[in-house]
Length: 355
Image 1 (cartoon, rainbow, N blue to C red):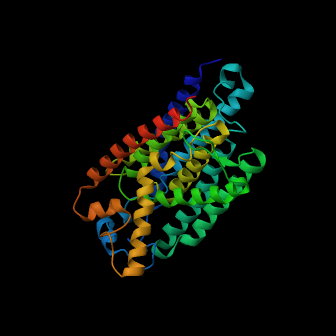
Image 2: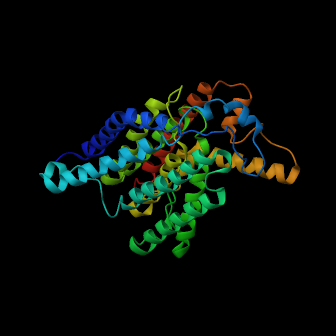
Image 3: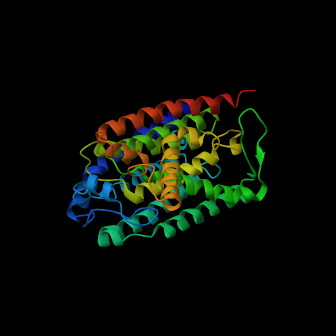
């Protein structure tokens, strides 16, 4: 047997090493297949074009491969599968490292895989048909909402979760409404995943967020969930190694959908299921994702109602780019903000568990 700390750290290191080893092969394949957009640009969330964004990113979009997110979810699934198989064929040492756990990690692993597959389909269509390709926003939201409903039902019907934790207070009882609430939170997190637009930004932010949730789960005694979150962080850091400017590849939809769906599951799994407040602290820990959603919605609302934009371009990290900030400055400041917010969220989550 090994310590709980080692059970969390060894999968994280393993996922990182698997990702580092796998990345050159993935990069070679993506460049060989010319897995990038054939025409630069995208359509705005509220309809119409995005000329400022297109001007900022017109060169990199047609020369840098998409689907780099494969590196993340493949490394996590490979790590989980490796320890699962070793635990069932060798001695108890490997059993201690197995983090495939019905109550804690079945749903996060399912969400990671389901999001990866749906995002991969979108990416393949995007590469083939560029701006007019890919799944529509409505279809992507429907996929995410459906997965959220399935997961919410599992938490409600199979795990008995009917409430969400509130710090220093009794949990807020939702009953069966926890299912649509779960779906709404999942959609909101997915909407925040649109930070994959600057080299290194999404990789660094998601790595920090999952490390924080590994700490939250560890503090709640959920060793398997902590190991899962830590392995996602490790795999994301491997991706970041190759995504630091100039990026070898982009995370794109197969990465962002997998990560955001997995994050939703981790947040709920670390909530009342473990006597915690994982959902309550989510907007704090993932503050830059929250800002991404809110600024995008505000931009669309302002354009529709008042006929003018609040920001030069939304989400707001592209607004800073349009103001003339170097991409590296935006990225590193987002990392700093996420670290500080993560520390605050972790402290609140741990304090809320104190008697």
